[in-house]
Image 1 (cartoon, rainbow, N blue to C red):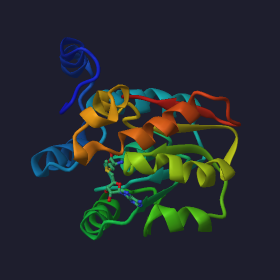
Image 2: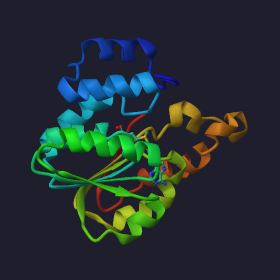
Image 3: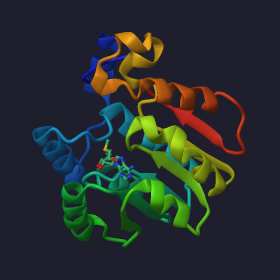
Length: 203
Ligand SMILES: C[S@@+](CC[C@H](N)C(=O)[O-])C[C@H]1O[C@@H](n2cnc3c(N)ncnc32)[C@H](O)[C@@H]1O
């Protein structure tokens, strides 16, 4: 973890006690770590296993595919779900296409190429589970479109809403590369107010 928000010992404890990924997920996780491609952390994998097995969503939207790791994880734990995943980065799209062709055995996942700012406006499906994992500063921009497409009782999960702790700092103390923290903060504040779905963020 690059910038842990929670106590490092707790993170280490979780990481040494959690169930390991197996098969293609272990392979993709190792590839992402080697290539320094940010995918969900191990404890988030554990959270998703629990959440998806419990909710069993049927329509999932993901913003931020990268190599397809989290989409394939969701496919494994929500086997009846249709998953739409969006990414705009050509290199990531190339990796994701390869991985989905190999490992999406039930053909659950549709990769939509393009900027979420445009793609989200064209969606014509309602979702019962949304995973937001793109540029954090854009969450507040995407939220209105996401809420239009969220079924009543649906769940949105936002990755890294505390921006590695930057959200609690004065904006002048935040590294320029992380200065999206102020806008992420606006989003996090919005999430703390009631909306028609259930929002969940983790750090
Ligand atoms: C953290 S990675 C996603 C990791 C993936 N969810 C996983 O855990 O396996 C974030 C991805 O979001 C994509 N992204 C960032 N901003 C985006 C945007 N505006 N529209 C579409 N994709 C975007 C990036 O190209 C990158 O591949």
